[in-house]
Amino acid sequence: MESLAANSKTKRCPECGVYIPIDATRCPDCKKRVGPADKHGVGRKAVNYRAYAEMALAFAVLGLFVWWFFLKG
Image (cartoon, rainbow, N blue to C red):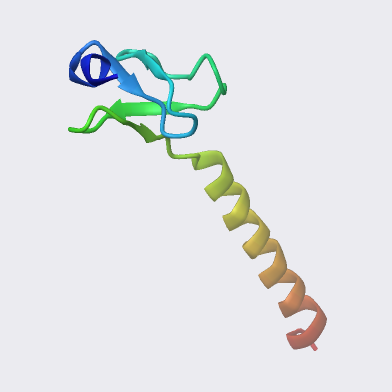
């Protein structure tokens, strides 16, 4: 595995640890999204912007519900 880590054409999946091509955006083994490699050859976890947007929407709906139910009248 030392030779794979030193090889600049591969990176390691942060989820399952499998070595994948450096330009891969998804791990073929665990199917998770993989970002660019860091200085140690490990791919960064890709940011899930959709989850952040859904969370913000859920908090907005919760805030509107609290305002409507408790503070409106």
